[in-house]
Image 1 (spheres, rainbow, N blue to C red):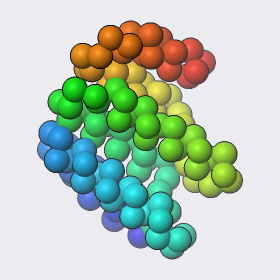
Image 2 (cartoon, one colour):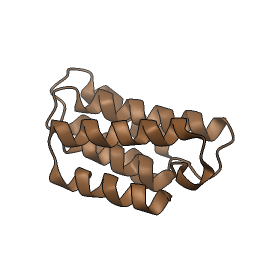
Image 3 (cartoon, rainbow, N blue to C red):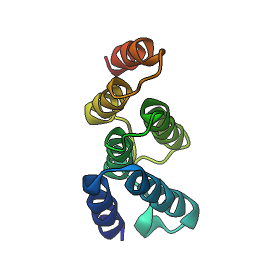
Length: 117
């Protein structure tokens, strides 16, 4: 069920690194595509994957985290009520952008901060 998947994602998230982030995103993708209501990703699922990217050390950490946040928002707009971005989602994405060496990171972090309000 979703709790088991979330536990696995959380464990990978806590290990940190690029491989962990890639694995969490792969698990999320399988959950999204499965069609099985028992393993449908929820807010916690997406938040953990965003956090995995924030911990990854990748140069495009912010971009990756924001993509997951956007997937989350898209799912919600499609009527999946078990998923909706919350303060943790936005703060974790902002944290990811703060660790990105990209020039756009400050502007994007500020934009996400405004979206959260």
